Length: 262
Image 1 (tube, rainbow, N blue to C red):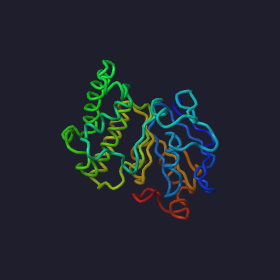
Image 2: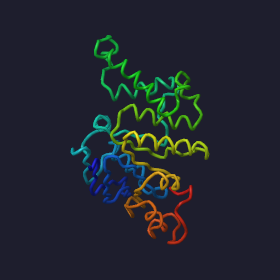
Image 3: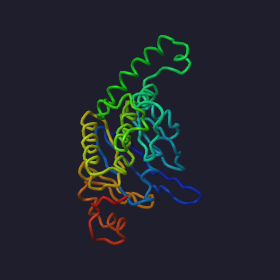
């Protein structure tokens, strides 16, 4: 079943075209990779899908409803959550508290209700704490629950970003460069985590520099270059597509399967 469909997305900044007539379809249950060299429009596409940017043209349908006219908070409530290359953690809060904040956004309650101690808000708060603990367990951070987020090792901070996104109870999870800065062992752990989350039933779109990770996880890969979609299909075919090779290397030979791709 089709979960998300975007048609003819266009976006420009000061006359510079960031997305050009991009079509994108993601089926429920898929794990889709999105690759491309620096400046190809990958993160911009995620920003449009998550409501951070409003596209100049085109439309986005998610779960059968138009969402391109919604703001970021509304899109989260529709069921799309994302991580960011530049982590947005609350450094002075504990690891658990960071996830509770996200769980409250995804689960209801209100600031006024929290202050007044209203029963509905108290119930939402209890549910949020329970959900946050479950999310930390899913990303293997339970032992760090009471530590300050800023004290986490870098790789664990990446997993905390994913836990916060999972706390929003997404139908579609957008992972933006989750392996950036990780060593090989941390990359292996992250790959296993992404696979486990997908097997739990979460649909995932993965933007990643490490093309080997993408092809190892994703059966289907979409390639962008200069804001345009240049390939879409089975991962093995896409990384050998002459247009993809040219985008990465400036020529149509070589292999686009290195770790320094996007």
